[in-house]
Every structure is written in structure tokens, then in C-alpha cells.
Amino acid sequence: MPASRRTMLAAVAASALAGCAGPADVISGSRSASGAPRAATGRGTPGLAPQTAPAAAPPVTRAQVVARYGHLKPRNWGFGVPGLTRALPTARRVIALTFDACGGRGGSGYDQNLIDFLRRREVPATLFLNSRWIDANPAPFRQLAGEPLFEIANHGTRHLPLSVTGRSAYGIAGTQNAGEVYDEIAGNQAKLTRLLGVPPRFFRSGTAYCDDIAARIVTDLGERFVSFSVNGDGGATFTPGQVRRAVTAAASGSIVICHMNHPERGTARGIAAAVPYLLASGYCFVRLSDELR
Ligand SMILES: [Zn+2]
Image 1 (tube, helix red, strand yellow):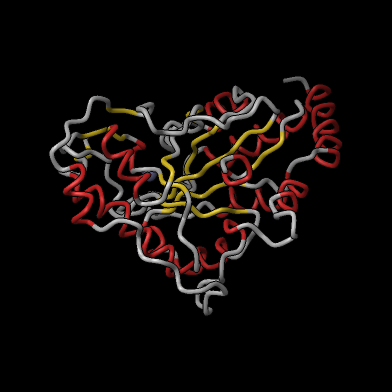
Image 2: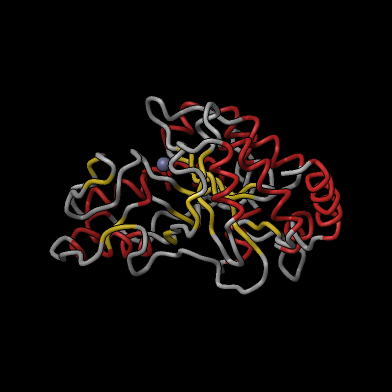
């Protein structure tokens, strides 16, 4: 891109940010009519006593899930099965950036540059955190959980594809049955509920793969399975240029999936290039709870 074009875009981006109904307004706009923060922003600070009453137990038990779904055969498998949310229900120029932190060996890094960029530009985002990543990153977790700019969501307990029959994705064996599906959701749900003071609203499985029966179990556990419409970083394999091209292809209502656990990859630099371009194009960024009621 010529330098003059870059300069022009940067100037437009600055003005777009200032005039955007996005980041700052979106956050204040997430308050209820009474001015009280909605549940998603009313989290207690981890390490301190929750400001809300102790969270309720999951709405269903493991035994109830096994009885209800243990005999059912799934019909669909993948990113787009019935019951999953793949886009925001809006025609307005808003985009939800979501960042997964998968945890486990080789997956528990923390992309400080990415998060610092989002903070600097006041770009809201939804962070899907796996239980193992939280265990490996207690200090970053506490800080992120206390920032209204970010919304914390459930990325599973062991980071498994969500299957009632043991199907695999990308060579990762999925949960084996309905009981294991419950464990994968409820384990990290309990952890997040204890740490945040309120249960997480959104779930995405490890690899984002799911079958239609498992998706119903997510719903029964009081969460919403959020898939994606734009693969922003190819599972944290893309170069910065590939991330920029993928993310700038987002459109009204897109849910973009990227990763915040691989600082050595191209995600941070790609996002830093894509966000100003999208702001200059009139888009605003939201957390999932800003658009999904
Ligand atoms: Zn993941």
C-alpha cells in the first residue's frame, strides 16, 4: 500500500474512532436503563469476594443430561450445526472480535501485545478462556476479568471437541458421551462462576467443533454456543498479512475467531493492521453480550 494511502487511512481511522458509536459508547450502552451494569459487566473481581450473591448451581445435573441425551444419535458435526450462533443478528456495521486461549502444553501463552493494542484503541472483545489457560495465567486472568472492555467466556475444561460419540477434529479426540460433554462445559463453568461471581454466558468448544446433541447440552447448562463466521488467524497459524486479509473481510454482524495464546504468531500484528482499516470503513466493535441477548 502506498505511504500516502496509509497516511490517509490512519487519519480516517483516528476520526472514525472518535466519532464511532463503538468502543466507549458500546460499553456505556451495555448498561441497563437503570444504569446498573448488565450481568456480563457486573463481574466481581477475582480474588475478592463476589459482589453478587453466590452463583446458583448449573440448571441441570450430570445425571439429568445423561438420562436426557445419552441415547440420542447426532445428525450434524462441525462449525455450523443447528443451535450454534455464527453471526450477530444485526445489519448494523458492528463486528465481534473473539479471542480463544486454549491452554495445555504449547497453548498457554499470553499475547500481551495483542491485549495492549485492544486496550490502547479501546476495542472491546470477548475472550474464550480454557480452564487450563486460567490455571497457567492467574495474574493476567485477574486483570482481564476486571476490565469492562473484555468479556470472559467459557472455552471448555480440557479443550475437547464437543461430541456425544467421541468424534475427533484436527486429530484431537472429542468427548466420548453425553456425560463427558457435561463435564467439558460444567467444569470450566464452575471455575469461571467461582472466579467471576456470575456464570459465563457463552461457550465455544476446543477446536470449535460440536454435534447437534452436544449443542443442546450447552443450552441446557445455561450457556450459548458461539461459533464464528470469520476465521481470523487459522488457529493461530497465519502470518500477520494473512490475519489482516482475513479480518478485514469481516462484514456487518461478523463474529471473528482469533487466538490470544500464541504471542509468537501473527495474530497481534494482523489485528493491529486490520482494526484501523475496519474503523475507517465505519465498523464498530462489540462484545458478544452487547448484541446477543
Ligand atoms: Zn481453543
